Amino acid sequence: MWPSPPRSELVTPAEREALLSGPLADLDDPAEVVASTRVYEGRVWDVRRDRFRFGGHELERDYVDHTGAVAVLARDADDRVLLINQYRHPIRSRDWELPAGLLDVAGEDPLDAAKRELAEEADLAAEEWRELLTFATSPGGSDETIRVYEARGVSATAQAFARTEEEAELVLRWVPLAEVVDAALAGRIRNSILLVAALAAHARG
Picture 1: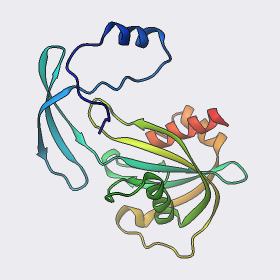
Picture 2 (picture 1 turned 90 degrees about the horizontal axis):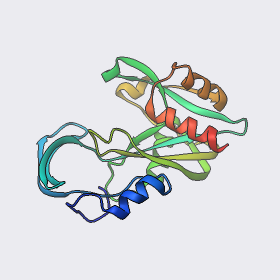
Picture 3 (picture 1 turned 30 degrees about the vertical axis):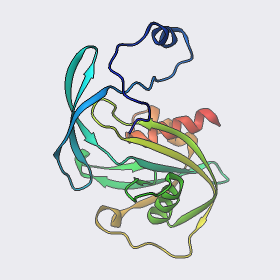
């Protein structure tokens, strides 16, 4: 959930000036929610309907009520990135991705969740961790945010994890970061988390 207190007025003159001429940044500005109902309970996430006050009116919107997620861009000493290939039914495709998973364990720190996902999906641990970036995947239809960590000093875990369902057929591949960027710009890979993370890592060096 967004952290700022709710408000119902329009953007103030000072805020508008900051948006137009200040440093480029999103403005935390949650509207006052007057009613919120879960209209669909799914296997992994739900759909919620909010009625909220905005600009002197009451509006109603449905959106995916998401737990949030983490992802890991693991890099080795040769500047290669660990990718996993996994079947994703909604797009009927086996796409290249980063190790990632939901923040669905109550009270779990996001960094601990990232370490868990790297171990569960790739049987790997890492010595160095830093937060690469956080982004909203689809702000018009979901409250999901994904925090991406960069992991270095990677080594194998003491034991391998048993994987089921789609994860039973994961294919792992270490790919030079420059090659990942080339594939992204050429449109050969489409996973949003991988695209955002790889381009950010490339820009930061």
